[in-house]
Image (cartoon, rainbow, N blue to C red; front, side, top):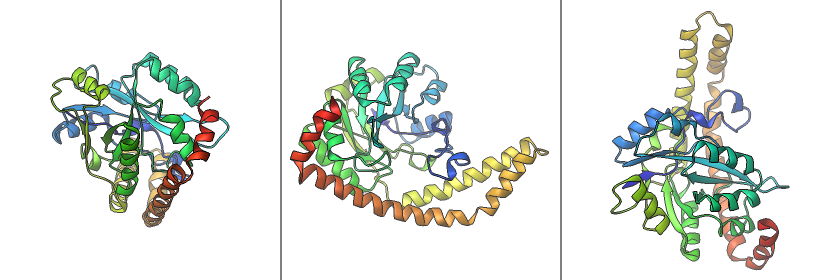
Length: 305
């Protein structure tokens, strides 16, 4: 059975990038749209892993081929560092508790372990969650159940870092598209050979009988997503005007977006700069993990206490 283990919908909220945080969504995917597209592209199971939300997965109801997940933002107290963790098998009550604990990984990780919620450390070679160091990674490794070794939105070199780390530590490796747009859904996935049901798939995950495969990301995939996101943004603005033709705010947003069209070019240039920075971050993280292990290990007790 196949599952794209990392997918977003509009339930992930608005962008965290300033000044887009109040106008541009993290994703314009709908839960039903993700479900239909994932199945069409050969996924036997479907999950949605919105940022700190499970509402999209719950919208799909109690379907036997749906796994409720969330991309949880876990914080290291007293720092500007956080991590993205995909957590699977959530229900509303445990989701509330995870959200209560997530600001402190020292409380969050033991809870996830006690509740036997399958947890992966996502895009370890990326700086999107903050300036992660080798010490932070080393502190988390004993607590996570898998590493995301292929992220469909990250560079191959970043995924290779995760693959090498998984091989060096004997950690399970999983894969997901990290799709914020329809383009990526079901293009990167985790397979459990021989599984015939959701329960058998999850059992295979726990046992490590997994194969991670599918597409990696690149500047061009991000550039394509930026153009598609722009189209989705303007489509939403037009639909809002059609719903409220006499609403001044709706018209202001539409024409403000039209005037902001040149910013799309700025975003494309920013994507290139982003990936240059990502490659450098990945290199520095590797240096931190390999060339300075003593400094990393000395920091682990403080971080994991």
